[in-house]
Image 1 (cartoon, rainbow, N blue to C red):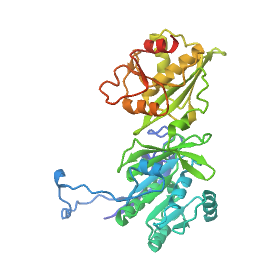
Image 2: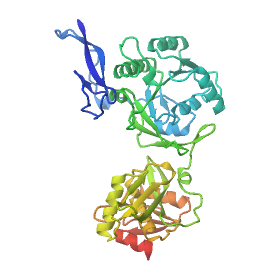
Image 3: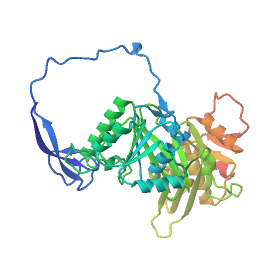
Image 4: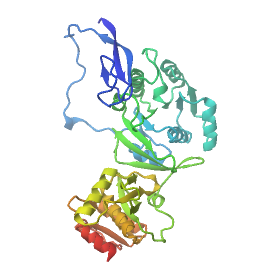
Length: 454
């Protein structure tokens, strides 16, 4: 079939394709991100009517499910996020900010695997730099082979010679194929290299892990088709000012996307956090201070406690400030409007600062009641008992709405020694089991205010 070459412009931020150069990308809104690339286009011809069909439709009831063979990783947190381990023949993408610990997480895991031959391809660091990192982690493995290479053809040559059982590419944006006439990291290069590695993984049944960069918006850099190609997308996130890191699955064809793994950055690498509730609570729990309450959030099937800190003060410069860390600012504005409209508290001329302790980003609506309680506690400068936990969603009409997994949240609070749990009215109806923790049911935000200040 005849072919021809033409120029197409790709957005380097989101992968949008255009036949001409554009100053602003219509898809993502970024400026000056279009780059010209040469692509080979096949000319239209007559359809081949003699094409043979090798696959026939099969009834869904006749298909027998197969247990995917998995490689058990040394990190239990990583296994939980992956859904039980690394699936053979899968393509996994790990993204995160620079310096967040992606390479450290992978290196300390593969150095602990003794029965697999592993090829670690580094396009960003030299072999001596990787050796220094391995020495810092305190682990050495003769089964791990290091290859510092950026050309895709040379990588596949070494793969044929080594025949590894696990391949890691760090990072996909540094790898370039000779078949594509563009620089490494471009849309065409990332797409072509990822597709070639996917074919290798499926044909050889060898799992491949890719490390990817992210852009300034927090999304994985490169074309969006990269996330469609891979089987699993993991996001490694956290504030570098804090010691804690969260590993969450954005896409997982072999498991759940609601699980998270929690790590603590220490001198010898990443340490697993088995009890996140103790991590997120202050050590001085016996000292009661205003503006601090405890809520319960759920990530996947794991409930853990979150310390909510609020500070309400008079606006000194005329315009009230709304500063939020770890919580949705638009939801905070909604809760403040509910307090002013339904509970008659005037907070429009006051500064409100809200923080989720430990650097955690919480999106669970069940934390709403803890946020409202912390704001009112700081506003009146009245402390709330540190033995009380708040669980509930606040609606626009001021009602306290029921939340999911209430029994798991209350059981976690009871296990950690809390004496009282404020929950939505009727939320525990029909739940079996006897609880020793005191339960206080509230139906409206006025009931919550009476509980706090009476």
